[in-house]
Length: 180
Image 1 (cartoon, rainbow, N blue to C red):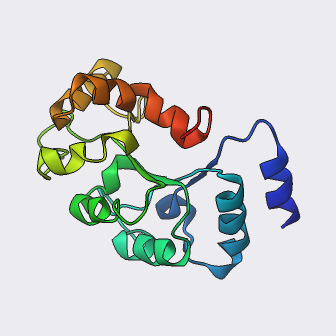
Image 2 (cartoon, helix red, strand yellow):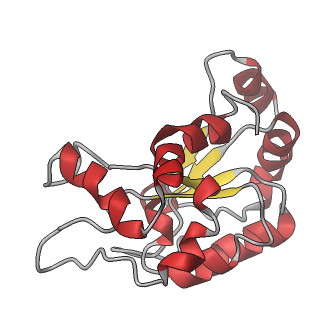
């Protein structure tokens, strides 16, 4: 508790990033409940790599996230890569969780023949949530240039205002830099 309280009191903390695949932990471990409740109270966001693509282990996947959101429905969380490869399942949770965001990293880019990163969900379903989609690039950890990541956003079917929001405004709201 002391560590969480100290971190949340810091003016330099904008949120937490969890990557259960790499960090090898269960996001539903009861020892994290204090952190989750404190994040909800303080509106501190968590970026959580919880989708099962392109690599999975026993700590990632929609089942873990559903359970977490049932336990902490007000949690402010961004799911990178739009929950790759469980796009549809993550998108279905958006109605019930208004503090849930998605990011576009790696999705809809020309990634090469061994990796399909196209977004297989009808554009109109995603545009409904354009105010909760944030630009993500994964750059420089990827093999394509930054412009390719920027170009990928136009392939989602967003209008000009939504693209502007995705490219910055939504992230500012998610992080609590601006109200919303």
